[in-house]
Length: 150
Image (tube, rainbow, N blue to C red; front, side, top):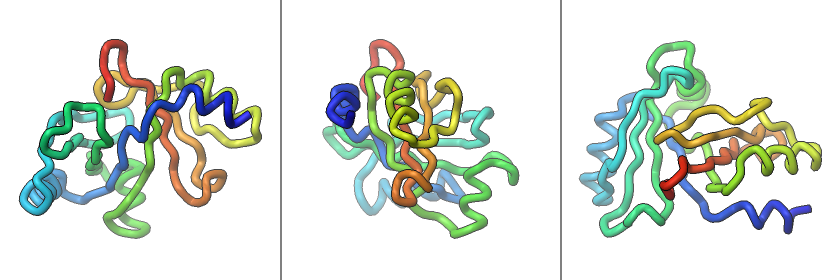
């Protein structure tokens, strides 16, 4: 089964880091590591303000760092921060067909959080594998919007 899924996975898309203050986190990663915020948006449905950061010279093909700050106290990121403070929140794999990958993972007995994919960053489609089924890591499946790579 895994060989079938691997044909849909094209890259590690990004790692998500939960932060209490998005602007301060962007400044930190820029000052200390030279990363630049190449995209920012508010995702009301997921209750976050987010930024995608890339290393100098990254044309969008490499792995990004996604910073996620809560919009309100009820957001999943706010609850994450409350439980354990800032830190690595997710690992995202770029896939060519999020619905097919979710179906294949369900067939293997993994819990996928949404019945159907939901809108993500930059009009992507996303779904998640429950951390209890993935070694304690929240795994995001991200299908970039048509015509984009990240």
